[in-house]
Structure formats: structure tokens, C-alpha cells
Image (cartoon, rainbow, N blue to C red):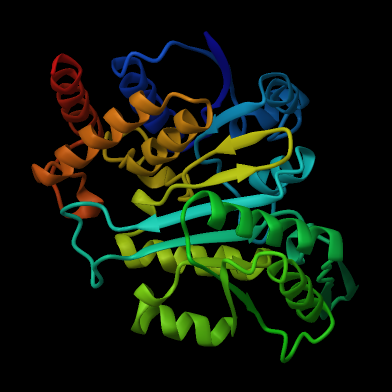
Amino acid sequence: MKTITLIKGDGIGPEITDAVMKVINAAGVAIDWDIQSAGAGVIETEGSPLPERVIESVKKNKIALKSPVTTPIGKGFRSVNVQLRKELDLYANLRPCYNLPNVKTRYDKVDIVVVRENTEDLYAGIEHQVDENTAESIKRITRPASERIAKFAFDYAINNNRKEVCVVTKANICKLSDGLFLESARRIASLYPQIKFREILVDNCCMQLVQNPNQFDVLLLPNLYGDIVSDLCAGLIGGLGIAQGANIGTNYAVFEPVHGSAPDIAGEDKANPTAMLMSAIEMLKHIGEFEAANNIKLALFETLNANIMTADLGGKAKCSEFTQAIIDRLFVLSTK
């Protein structure tokens, strides 16, 4: 039996976590969940939104499934997500974005993979107050981190039958920092002649994504642009409620949905667990549970095709009803 760290988070986190645990159990996967709490709810008792016990759990188990954790805007504690990625050196943020069945969007046949550098850039948090009217943030880009994420993107392309990697920067303005990222990507691209390589500026990329997203395959971006563009890509396929994510390093991997904790609907049985479930599907594949991952994905798609959806997708199903519908279809699949 595989032991996996489970971080329930806050807001709607516990609800969608429980839903996904039920689906995985119904798929017949035996997992010993090492349940850990994090976020605003543990600060008062433990002094930190990310206690050391959470880090140690992931280090011990190597794999974690994590639900959303609230990040205050403009004040309060530092993002748990950012801290977790830095502590575990989860240098690659992987965001596959593709259309799900019966989810109405402006575009069809979108199939984009966003590969985002996850440890540096402005997200390194190097900032200070110059004076009472001026704050300064430092954008740090290094060659080792840039080459490492570029290699990840090209290896992913090779292993997943992708045809092209497109690097996205603003190297015409940030000539040294983004220039270094671009130079690193070019060097790594030269080692993979079988994969097409092109370059695009981030503003042009955003325009092209909303005009013709089907032109893109794998996008390679520094941290900040990757955060913004990956959410844009989620919008192309139906929103953050269905957007999966993974944070991958050399030794550890944390799978998580990319949406927020939505505290305004916490406890109301309204949350959409799809993004959490899609992330769990990728986690199951990562640990070799391919049959269960495929069955869960089929059950999810059949549920969507039956027009059983949560409110954010235009449906009327509660979180619990949507979850049960997936489990019911899993049972049918398992008896075939």
C-alpha cells in the first residue's frame, strides 16, 4: 500500500479533498493517506501556515496531493504554495490544459501544456521598502534554473509525443533576466533537434492564445508569466474549476488544483472537485496506477457528458451529487 501525503487546505479544500478520496477509494486504489493540515487555520496553534511537519511528511512519502490554501492579498503570511515549492525544490509547474467533454467554451480541440519555472523570478520574494513611497522587487533569473526547466519541457515533449516547445519571454525589455532565460532555452533546444522550437513575446502570446490557441503545443515560461498564462489557458477550456496542476522536482512531486480556496462557498456543497480530481488522476499515473487513473477519467467524462455538472459549469449538481455520479459510473466500469 502506497503512503501519500494529503494536505486538505482550507476554504473548500476539505470538501473537494473528501470527494476525491471517495472516488479514488471507489476505483479500488489502496492508499494510506498521511493527512496534514495547512493554511490560515493552523497559524494560531502552530505559529505557521506551513508547519515543518507538513514538509517532513512530503519528504518522507515523496508524493503529495494538496487542496487549495488561502493566500492573503497584499498582507499576511507568505503563500504556502510558493514556500512548499521552494522548500522541496519543486522546480517544474506542469499545467496540461485541454477541453473536457460537454464543457462549453469558445474554442474546441485546445491541447496546451504550460511548463512554468517554479522557484525563482519575482516569486523568490526578494523585495524591500526603499522609502515610504517606494517599494522594490528583484527579478532573479539564473542559468541553472532556466536550463533545468527548459530540459524538463523538452523531455516532456519527447515522452508525450509533443511536436513543439515555444519559449515565452519579454526579452525585448528585460534584456538581461528574460534574455538569460531565452538564451538558456535556445541552448537546450539545440540538443533536441527532433522537437520544433520557437520564441514569442509574452504580450503577443496572450493575444495569439485568445485568437488561435490551437497553434500552441508546449509553452515554456519563467515563473511570473507562467502563472498568468496558465490561468489564461484555463480560461480557454472552461475555467479554474477544471484546471489541474502538478509541481515536480527531482525527489518530490505535489499534485494540486490551481484554483483558490473560495472561502465564500465553503461548507455549502457547491464546490467543483473536477480540478482536484484531474490532479489526482495525474498523481495516480505518476505512481503507476494507470488502470485506476483511466477508469476515473472515463467516469468523470461520462458524468460530464450526461450533463451532470456543478454550478460553475452551468449545471445544478451539488459537489456531493457530482461526486456520487462519478462513483456510480466507476462501479459500472469496474463490472464490465
